[in-house]
Image (tube, rainbow, N blue to C red):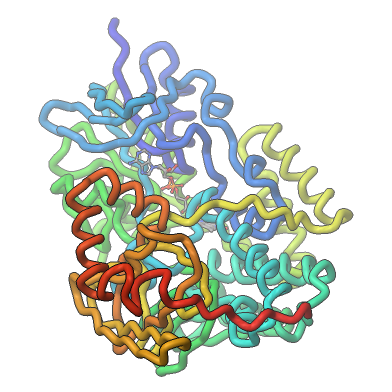
Length: 554
Ligand SMILES: Cc1cc2nc3c(=O)[nH]c(=O)nc-3n(C[C@H](O)[C@H](O)[C@H](O)COP(=O)(O)OP(=O)(O)OC[C@H]3O[C@@H](n4cnc5c(N)ncnc54)[C@H](O)[C@@H]3O)c2cc1C
């Protein structure tokens, strides 16, 4: 008999545990294939510890091929689904070419996306905490801030570098703030020019209290503990906008900071929005068996799915499975049983599960736990937190590696090696009114196009006393002299109102302009027209760059 093809999309908690159970229950009768964009499974609850250097990035993940030895694992990007044809299109391989995969039953477990579009600037200026790259970037960024703050003598810049903001105080926000604070605390003895009292960290939550899924008294304990660790907890306040220099809160307060971590904004997976499925709260509606109504061979689970726990669910989140790892794992088992039962012509079973509780780490060997109705806090809760996640990690090798990381981290100095990741060559940068884009004496970095708002360029020639001013609006540009010379800036550009610029790094802009002779010509003529030609007063190179006052070694 031909084996039935089961295609699982997504290698997170839902997809992995469904594939594992399918392979076991349907051995010999099912051909299980799992598609994931990375070749590893991310244990998300440990990401804040990766950010804090407690665990090496590669040790918080498990290779999918070693986890699912009898499942065909395919590293590819899911691009589309044709339900009528029962086919999924994925992009894969060195040239990222499309490939069509056929299925008899499809399991959708791609998780959620991040949607920060409601808060201007947040998507462009915040770090997120969803996958391994995010955790690695946060760690690198925090260490980078300490390195720069240690050598700068500009007080304002130093303040900004040493101020850290985490937005959202669910368990990922709380754990991210606590672990980042812990990394900074342990790293500070190696940064002689930074005093502990110069560090400021804020945890911002729109709801009246943090950790909404925990009982009130545990949330109160957690708040007290975080405050004790030097984290200012601001509740009942949202964020209004963000720029490269900080966040604006809904009460009008501006916090200048070089680090904003957004743990808010769980949105629908981008693919889900194109499939024409019935969505609610951005999640795919399923029946109680996890089947997607209207599509006989499609199932959904995990964070992507809205699985009812009662017959007539109301607009109450308690009527649905929660978006947690413990639910996704249970859903995976039940979904596999239902698919096997379907092929055997047996009765399917409703998904039913009651949360066993929640745990959240607070740093400094403290945690809160609400397990089987028993409330714990402090060191005991923290030991429980560690023990629970160690047992929950799939595979002996992963448990062993994480255990060794924890032991080494408790007896060794923190790892403050900064493995730098270059910023994207092209990026949006938001500015508030009065912000400086660049000023005389700064090294030329790139080319800017105004997307919205207005920006004023001022150049003063100290030798001739001449003064030049120009205001740029949407569609106009400045900084094009990077095509001519790589030297220090001679002009000052300030935002006249809140605005947005598109930045292109010097090397990439120069390559691009040189590749299109008409562009190169356009910029040469523009410089001639605007600044009066290469031999005129404000032509690039004719105004001596005003050297910044040499910083004194702190
Ligand atoms: C920082 C953090 C801490 C957390 N802590 C806890 C905790 O302590 N306890 C708890 O119970 N829960 C916790 N959670 C929540 C828990 O991790 C999620 O509920 C769980 O991961 C959901 O599983 P999933 O399989 O639905 O989605 P995911 O685990 O997100 O898996 C989705 C998979 O699909 C892949 N994918 C996405 N798009 C594509 C595509 N187009 N093509 C190919 N592959 C794709 C992704 O790479 C990923 O591997 C935490 C979450 C975070 C972010």
